[in-house]
Length: 324
Image (cartoon, rainbow, N blue to C red):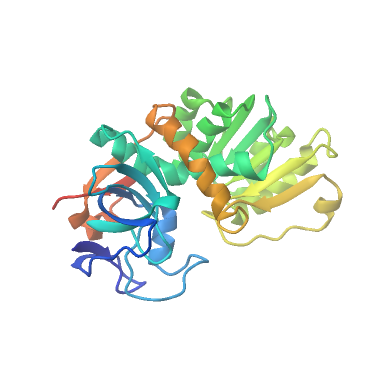
């Protein structure tokens, strides 16, 4: 079969031939892959920087997808640990899959492949890492990427009363009020100045922060927000999800003593596999029902090498589909 194959962590995957995987055990089935999205998580695995990478090559990238079984069943699935999804065929463990309506149209398949992974980041965080009280205030740091854009919508969908969306891209930021953002804040320029802009909004009184950025942005924003907080004894759940701005930060210990800060992460390990899988069916239902605005870009699998480095609009997600 053909697949996207990573031969080196320093170069994009190539469209290449590889052995067709073989199902093992009663829960596995071979599917024809209809759509597999190019998520940041996929990129980090393909360049060897993701914390779960074992350094083994060659590898087929892709962590999820939509496929059809030989019996015609349509599935959204999360890939087994030893198989990627950017291929003509993939092995699916039914325990890590969600059945979809068999007549879901190609646009729906593409949208689902594009949205499930980025949507899962905030959906799981708000349903598994914290209790989101009705009317709660939520700050999304990094709201102009695909995951952040969906996080704004999901926070409102799950009952947030006020959402502050902060991001760098001005055009994407301007669109977020239509998707549920009550306030928007530009993070362009110096991180110190961006933190001061955040502190001048209602963001300091957030109940939950969904942080896709980390690094220098959070290093400046977190102290600024805690300092400006009206009631520092009120719990603030700061959920670290992504590190688009940097992998590390320095946090003076005084801020952990001077405010009721609950610093946590959400991802593989902090949420059990069973917990993540339990959230797939309700999330898939919301996506296929059209509850969220999604902006996928379908590209043939044969063009994976070009797609890997092609510029795309902020927030847009490339989805690899069959064909040449």
